[in-house]
Image 1 (tube, helix red, strand yellow):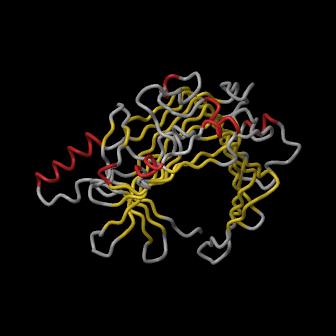
Image 2 (cartoon, one colour):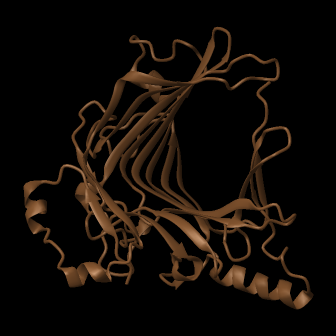
Image 3 (cartoon, one colour):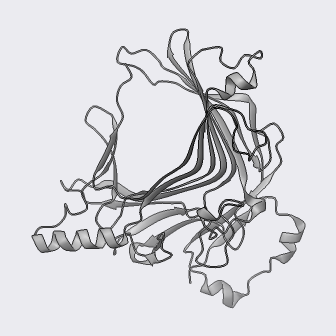
Length: 351
C-alpha cells in the first residue's frame, strides 16, 4: 500500500477534528512514497485582472501578445463566474497526488474497468495524479447522465465551474477573442507521468505519458474576430450566434503508452517545440518482436474517447444545464476507441 503525506489548506473544523496523530509505529511504516493534497475552499476571481504573454513573434519579428482575462474557478452554479462561491476539489480519501515511483508499480484504469501497467519497468517515474476514478462505489461523472459512467471519486459538492477568455492580437488594430466556460467540471483519473529515456541517438530525452479526462455538464465556446465583439450593447442572441454549446460532454484523451510508445517532448534545431508519438512497433528488431509489441499495444494501451451528448451551434440556453434552443442542433456526436499509431505536433512561427 502506498502512503502519502496529506496536506489541506484552511481545513474546516469538522475535518480537522476527524484527523488523528500517527503513533511512532505508524510513522515508521510511512516510506515517503509521495505527497497528497486537497484544494480546500478554493475560489479564483480574475474578472478585474489580465495576464499578458509577450515575446511571441511572427516571422517579421513583431510581437503577438496573448491576454488571459476573466479567469474564474469556483463551485458549480456560478453563472459563468458572476456568482462565485468556494469549492473543495479532492478529498482526504481521494486527493491529488505527486509521487516518485517505479514504473512497474504504476497502473492505469482502462475503459473496461481493468487496471494495466503502461509505464516501463526499472525506471523512476515522476507522476502527478488527479483524484482517482474507481471500479466500484463511485459517483456519476456527469450529474443525471449515465453515459459518462459512475466511477468518479469526486462528490457532487466537488464539481467546479471554470472559465477563461483569451485575446489574440493577430495584427495591429485586430484582436480575436476565444472564451471557454465549463459548468460542473470533473477531471478524475487524469495524470501526467514523466521519466528519462536514453533516446535513439543516446543523448537522452524527456518522455512520458498523459491521461486527460474531462467531464462537464456543459461547455460553451464563444469566439469573435472583431475588436469590439464584447461591447455592452451586444444582445444575448448576437453572442449566442457565435457560440458552440456542448451538453453532457466528456473526453478521455490518452497520449502515450510508456512501454512501447512514450510521449516524446523536445525542441527542434530551430527552437520549435515538438510533441511526438512514434509507431509503437518501432522498437522491435524482428518480426516476432514487432508483433509482440503490437499485440500488447492494442490489448492494453488506453484509448481516446470524445462524446458530446448534444452539440449545438448558435441559439441560447434557458438555464445553465438546458439544451439550447435555436441555432443548429447536431445532436449526439461520438468518437470512441481511438488510438494513435503515429502523431507529431510542432509549433511554427506566426506569419
